[in-house]
Image (cartoon, rainbow, N blue to C red; front, side, top):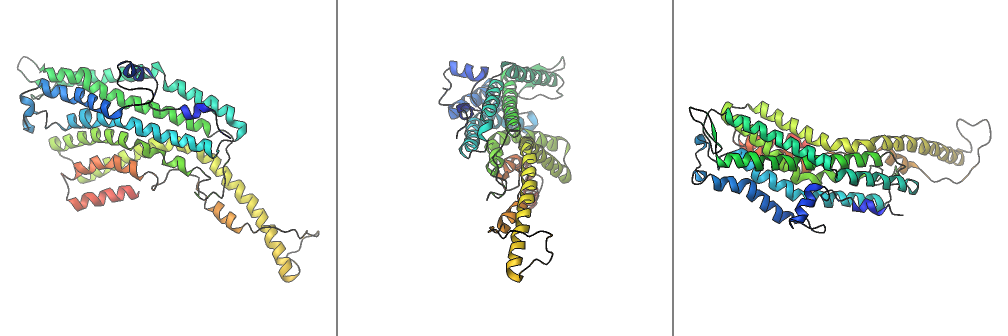
Length: 390
């Protein structure tokens, strides 16, 4: 039994005004996202154009002079971040599509709930294509640019983006480009990706309320849903891009004001917790049905185990140690011991350390590189291992 074809058509990186614009500009096709060429183009526009506008000063590597090539934020947001967000589109789409296909292949959703599942997927497709959502993302991106513009005017030193003069700061051509294009593009791509993950989250949480064909004794230890717990790793590149931007801000703070090892470790742990929570919320919807599955499974198997053991006891000694008031039929029962043990071990939480190691590593590696400038190599590895173990 298969779900409605719409389930297989939920392509996380398709649809919406921005997708349509890129399609009109021949940057992509419906059957080919062309993430590599688009990543190169967007990075060239966001990072390369300010570099060219700032020539010949752009070649300077003197950090104290606010050089373009020495600005960690520029590299993190306009080069790595934007490139990562675009490259992540294909990985995210293929990863989520594979999980939905597995839901249909098992099938996890009961046949009686297929019409409801189709309705949920149709709703998710409309939300994915929402013009209002992308307009809100664009508005927030413009707001971020406005804040950047105000910060440039309050800068107390010259840099690639602003000239500090007695009569007031003057924004350079490279600075204007970053305000009007580079930063809005970075923020928009991040918010657009986050919004689409929110749509995916709502999709999963709605599906979790349907009649699910879960198996308490499934060998994956999660009722047959373990594959869903691995979906966050499809966002590894996306998380890496955002982590680089935050790690660059931490590094700038360290260079300007200093940063203790304890504070850096706390920041790394806090960011990892945010990333895991970002994905755990969508998967937490399956905990209630898994809990009910475990509870009911242990109850039914426990009752069968009692009957089986009492029957075996009668065969062994001729009667039960605690006989029943009425005769009990000696029916052939299979031993439910292994099934009961498997049900006892059933996990009701889909997120685990083993399933999210790739995305956790993507969240922490940029911070580890920053930490390497402050701590010995062995200490950095020690902190990284502790956080990944947690």
